[in-house]
Length: 187
Image (cartoon, rainbow, N blue to C red; front, side):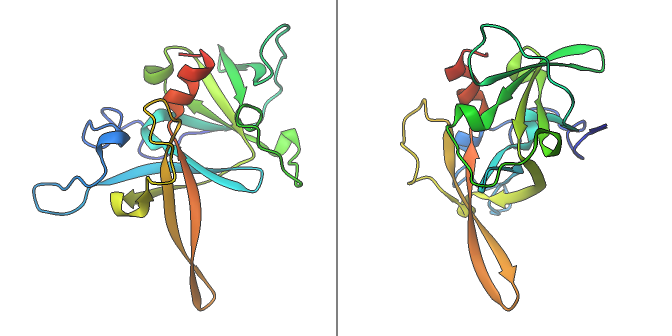
């Protein structure tokens, strides 16, 4: 069963107001307010990740994956998604994330990426999709990234969470899925 994430169909172009996430930090709009961006948050093992909302077409439940012979280990296989063959990438395998809590394959989700960035049908397998969130540039710490143009980490989002009467900060790793796919030779 497929579930389209609200707001995707109405988005005219990637990024906020046509800006790529790299150019967003510190930008303010005409009224002096800091610009915001939206991400899809998901889990890989116990780690919390996010990708730009406008890079996502939809999120679908796990479906049987047909393995491809002689493919890289991060290629999980292919699925038939409404009549279109879609390549599934195991993001946990590609990022070398290990976990003591292993979700069964049937519990996992597939984030289908927007064809405009991939130029082919590609989905990434994740342990769970949590939410769509909006953040401002002040929530992102870019000092934790390598600073290289080819880095697939855009920054670390500092997410404030109310836990009972205390407020705590959860760290969300914001991935540049386009750079990650380019490094894998997928786009």
